[in-house]
Each structure stands twice: as structure tokens, then as C-alpha cells.
Image (cartoon, rainbow, N blue to C red):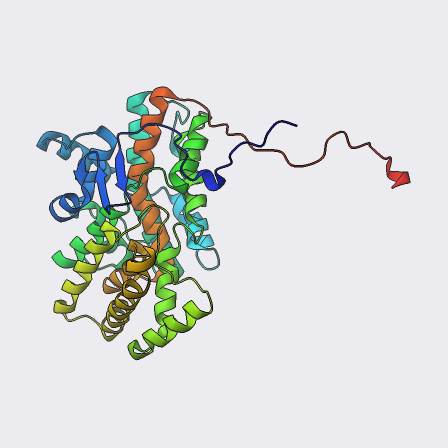
Length: 383
């Protein structure tokens, strides 16, 4: 038998391709989209412009921006068949199962879904960017037995999602908060869901199939569901004065503290810093008692964990730790956190599909076989 090769479990540390879409510097806590720092984009740009940047490799001119946003606004509504499916599934199905099914259904309304021409692929991606937030909002509405709210073309992309979900046009601060979350979740290099999107795309399956694969991967609590799990932990803590005791007992029991540590970041997640700053600003906006309580827990847990594990073991807060409380500022329920992640990440997924198809090669890794060979077959009557 040949010598066993080095196996990188989980493909950790393995480069599978080149990309100019985003760069994550885990050692120094930096993130760039197409060379632009996440701080600049989060504070000075908006989701539509960031999506254009990810897809096209440059910031848009005024004309390009106008044409791009016009397409998003025109395509935001859902076909009746998709709305009916969401309505049927909403009472009992997991919201991510609804996202997966509804996204997959969109292929029915594409006259040429297998066309991979560059402009045509881009057009399909834009359609998905436009419709996925509407699917997420409709899921939230139908779960509560409320009526569907169609998109409002006078609103920005992220603010429109909040309107379709709540039925209330968001104020400027709420619009900024939801846009921030869409920007921060838009892209993050070759993570699990992006990789699964590329595996499917590498077979030359259509954009809808690749997107559906990504949604399935993102459902996992080790990837897209971490912010919901972190909020659940905060609710389990309950009283802010119970924070230190809860964490101490959890650590002694070797339980994972959700929202801390990251596969790539070995220092403070730059996205977490941004969300934390807006959480603090929300305190000046007369938040609900729930949000005040959550923020007290967040700040106490952060201090304890960074003192205890950050400076000694490199376990720092990530974006998931602060995301849940910020969503609660906007009145968004936990079951919609990961569908929002999907709606945001479509820009990154689409950018990777477009880029990968320029030099496509089917993804076909190897695995080291450890089982027996040449086992004699025994007829069923003799077993």
C-alpha cells in the first residue's frame, strides 16, 4: 500500500482557486471587498453599490448605479406560484427550507436557465439578488398569518426588505442598520456555503441549482445559524447580572460560547466591531427594554470572554455575537436571521459563480480509502 498522504481535514489551509473578489486577513482582523475596506463600505456605501462592486469588480458610475438599482426594483416581486408555496410551507417548515424551495422554484420562470453566457449569468444573479429578500420577508409575514406586502420601488433594497417584513417604512436609522447587515454579510471569501456553490457551479449546473446548494449549506448551525444560537444563549442568560456566572459554568462544562472564535479570524472580527458600534448608537434611540437587556449582556459577556480567552487563546467575538441583538433593535425575529444572511450573501455567491465560470474546472477532490479490498462475496443463503 502506498504511503498515506497528508490529509487536510475540512480542507483547512487548502487553496482551491484564485479570486479577486474579497480578502480576509485573519491575523490582523481585516476584510476587503475588491480592495475596499469593509469599514469604508459599511460607513460610506450601500448594499446596491456593494453588490455592483462585487459583481463587476469596480464601483458604478451614476448611470451604471441607476441602471443596476432599476433592475433590482423591477424584479423584486414574486410569482404567484412562489408566494403560494411559501404560504403553504410557512406554518410548519423551517424558514431556511422555505428559502431553499422558493429559490429553486425561480428556475421555472427563466426561459433559458442553462444559458451561461456572461451577461445572461449576470442577469440571473441580479434577479436572485432582487427576489431573495422578498422570499425572506414573505416567509416572515406568512408565519404570522399576515398578508403579503409587495416591494415598494421608492425604497432602497435593504430598507425595502424591512418594509415588506413589517409593513412599516423604516426610519433613517433603521434603514442604515439593515443595510449595514446586508453589506457585512454580502461576501466572505470561500467559506462553506460559497465553496458548495462553486462545487455545484463547477459541474455547469445552472445558477439556481448552485444557489439552492448554498442555501442548504448555510442552514447549518456551524455556519449561517450561529447568530440565532448566540441570541438564544443571551436569552438563556436572562438577567444581565447572571452573565458571568452563566459563562463561567459553561466554560467549566466545556460548552461552546456562541459568537466567539472563528475559523479564519484570530483576532477581533472587523465586522463585529462595526455591528458593536451601531449597537451602542442604538442605545441613544430609546430602545425597548429587551434590547437594553440584551446589550447589557452583550457588553458584559464580551468583556469577560476577551479578558479570559481573547488575550490568552485568541478567541474573540465574531459578527454572530452582536448580530442578533442588532436585528432585535429592528424587531426582526430570530428565525429570519439566516434567511437574511441568504438574501445578503447572494451578491457574493453570484460574484464567485461569474468569476469561476471564466475558467471553469469541475471540483473533484480525492479521499484516502481506509477500508478492505478483495472481500470474497458470500451468497445470501450462506450468510
